[in-house]
Image (cartoon, one colour):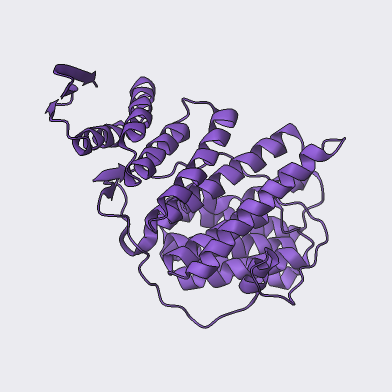
Length: 364
């Protein structure tokens, strides 16, 4: 009966870096490179299958559903749909933008505005115009940005098969353009593909994708830390760590939905550590992660520990006026119920329960 709040997007993404890289497509085993090999092929059309739901003791926030596994995709829509688009504008000051690219930029902005207004058909029509112009101009980066936005539009409208194929096209164009596999933009798209596979119940591909994203970013950060000269700026390091936190959180949600509670707890705790260090304990995402950790702990039967975590989360949520305070308080009440406490909720004011022959209270 516990509720799992939706994932707030981690802030900012590092734009892609243009460096030459060629993947080894000779092996499709369990190595990290197998993830890139897997997405480089164009499989037959897949049907959307239901992902294993949350256990019976867990429920989601009223603002989201777990039906059909679509909750795995909930954090990917919205602002994240335009992450690569920002790179186009950034490079205008670094290298010349052609007349055709300038026209494409205007079309992409128009499509983005249409998406924000909910005019999806209009956005799709504009994006096809942009893609046609990008191919005619021969601008690889324009093709990449357009494919990426088209893929995100398909994701927003629930066209998972189409989104999958478009994201694959984007990745292949990025590789051919010299973008490395550990580039944040490449990882971001790979994470979206992993979540699509999770929704399609393609468990092997989903797990491989999540692990590829996490291992790639961890190795990137470890390598940067081991160099005498900083290979990443402070901002780049922060963005990379936050993206790693997003990957850990996403994989933790997938594990929780598939009843791997201990592993989910581990992923959530790693994500929380990053979020606290980069954004602070009172950041909304830190509170959400604490709530999710409590869910995993409760599912493992660690009621006392779960209560301590969710109580701290509820106190922070109340202090910061978190929009999901009611969800965290609901979890607090449910954990007390699982502990055998007789609780009384007085309106939206307080929760009372009997403990050691005394009445304990939590005021909202």
